[in-house]
Image 1 (tube, rainbow, N blue to C red):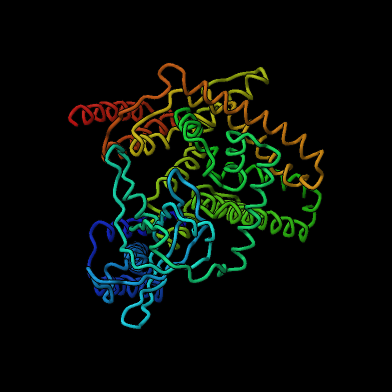
Image 2 (cartoon, rainbow, N blue to C red; image 1 turned 90 degrees about the vertical axis):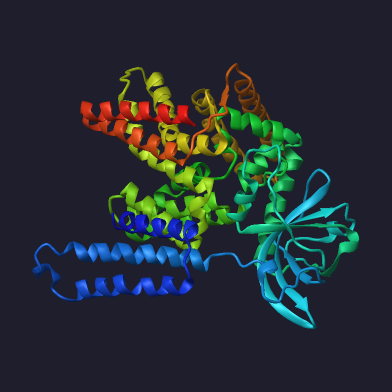
Length: 523
């Protein structure tokens, strides 16, 4: 449980620096006393000092607490508008590189870009800030692609929240390191180059576009191919907003975003295909590296979103532990992957998807067994149905407080929707992979496309009907961070009661529910 012990102080340090920042000089000074104490404690036979062994562990906690604060400081965004060479109310020529192909929106083409530099007084100042660009009615925007560079003197505008939307869009963008945006017309910019700066990125982009073209060719219906594109390569721009709302209202929106569910299915497929290669020691390692290569390749191909990277990191650690013959400890594997990802980008700790992903996996590890044991069945069909239902119930337990805190609603029929949506979406994902494989054989691809169209139509129709059932969504649920913490305390009490059957935990949980209701009434 090493990583679990150091993850907690690391996260505490990140949160402290985010909400209570101090001068950078103090950050680097404060890490040395606990580090020296830790080295001192481990450099001498400290166990001879009766009752003082705990000092080594405490010193290590403070080291990682300080390390978390330093990480957050290092990853702070440096915006162009705050740089020393930037001058307000004067012309500032910005050199900008597009980080993805512009995507067609209602009245514009949108893309994520990076400000590479600032031209001022015949000097080039290096800058690095991610921004959104909206190309408004541009003839030239169709010539732009990922890697293209443009130059403009239009001022950067801050991202603002939508007046009629409760979601804090500005904070959501800032956690993705995007604080500014540009609205460009034809006369507002000049194209410096259309060449892509990274040949590997060029290859991945071409491969993604090829897969999207195959899907659109053999599954022409827009409402159907949009879902396939999201499942296979993470391209969500063609999804119908009304259909997306139906998935959210039914509690199954997680099957659209590529995450651990899809990687688990691909991993199982690869294990079946490579089953005979893992009998010898060398064969098991070859099998491991082939599976990991395919999982990471699929993750990068799908856009390398944080949810995919998290899932890939988890699978990598779990498969390595299994191949080395060690017992896979869920909590330590979770903590290890979270520790590595937070070190890569500490802002991910505030990401809703990050929180929901780890809450879901932890919830499955804790509650699947107790929930499944609540009902004893003998009929095989009923047993299989209850097993699937218990997984959905268990995953919902620890994710519910977070999802309600951010989105202020709860899908009532999530259990019914997941029972059909999860297996059906798995079949669609497998079918989509087979469609890409057999696309050179036109007849086989046509039949596979028709089958996929039928399955997607069946899934969309089912989800749409569930979302329109009476009382499908309970909305306007409001509570603060104190309520979230209290809910997790209540779940802990009931979990301990299910495991130990001690009535004290049940009583404490009921008291917690009463206190939670009292807080909600006060608010």
